[in-house]
Image (cartoon, rainbow, N blue to C red; front, side):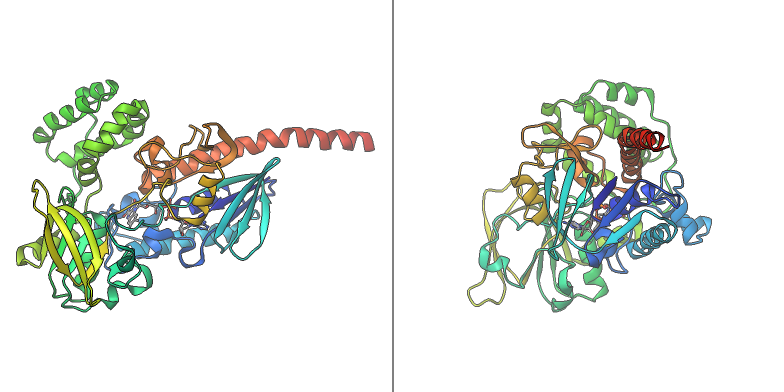
Length: 468
Ligand SMILES: Cc1cc2nc3c(=O)[nH]c(=O)nc-3n(C[C@H](O)[C@H](O)[C@H](O)COP(=O)(O)OP(=O)(O)OC[C@H]3O[C@@H](n4cnc5c(N)ncnc54)[C@H](O)[C@@H]3O)c2cc1C
């Protein structure tokens, strides 16, 4: 049986290494990914030295069995294990891990191409690559990561195609071309904005930076020393069992002021978040996405302390302004010298016309497959092999990771892994949950391989008896 994994970021490589084996195997694993981030993915392959992990090194091993593997790989001291290291180092670790698995295994092949089309065929799928080649695979796993960012609402077509609009800050050295005195408007005030500002600071940017989001909230930050680990208190357990977002929030609010550090409460909830989300009705999920999501994001996905300190410093100096409001319109100015915008501050009715030199999109993970321009995902959606969830969070899947087609039936043999599972699991963007789901899917795939191998082996044994 051949299993092909499309996407060689964290999820794809974690699954590939789970399935790779040095022993003789009937299983053939093919890892397909784009060359520039092969083995690392976007978060750890497109980052720069100033971009830090937002998790302490000690928890970042890529396998469920060994959470300390990354820290061991770097030979870190006890203190180093609690630090927030550059994401580049994590990319090196992932790549090294994949290369070792490939060198030791007899069943893992890596293909450095973009997959552009997947066709359903009897017993499996045909995968078409960007170089024009294609091959058959019995099972396919989509581990594509988040989708490429869509153009910001309100941005005109002339500006969208111009260098004054930076839709993906890490592409083609876009940030490096910004003059150091330029006035910048960044849309987004989350972790991506923090990365952009870290890079600007490293480049000694002097111009004013405005960061805008609907709520104007910055992510919270980790403390320099780890927060104490706490057991989930009984009344929080009871609140989880109510399957009611309001009850859960009230329980968190009542507890946060009485514990040593509120971060411990959020961390204690984390192992229960997926089960809570799956227990919610669609109405409750919708409410969460509309009303709670932006708060959840800033408390759950926290900044490394040194990054938070830099943002504070820039705000105090007046160079960085965090602002709550909406970008209503942005276009290239008539002489092409900048960006004319129309902004409405939160709670105001008046609109302000403002001029900036550059507009940078930093709005974070996009997983909405109904609007995407990702070629493979567009093709899958249009051919009806996948279907979008109701909240723009990703693809609909079964509990065994199989995707649902346009009519809501599971597509046997086509799986999904990574942040596109947010619609089913919500908490599925960071390493601890991703490595657990890679293990779980590997187990399903191995079971399905064994189930399909049994009749083949029995038939082969029968033939040998006949021959004898
Ligand atoms: C900027 C950033 C910082 C982050 N920091 C952290 C952190 O500090 N800690 C943490 O736990 N999590 C962090 N995350 C979350 C991160 O998303 C996950 O940790 C993890 O990297 C997701 O892995 P993935 O393999 O699912 O997706 P990705 O890493 O995005 O990998 C998907 C890969 O598939 C490739 N691909 C897509 N389409 C195709 C195709 N058609 N054919 C071939 N290849 C394709 C992509 O190019 C990419 O290489 C961060 C995310 C981002 C974006």
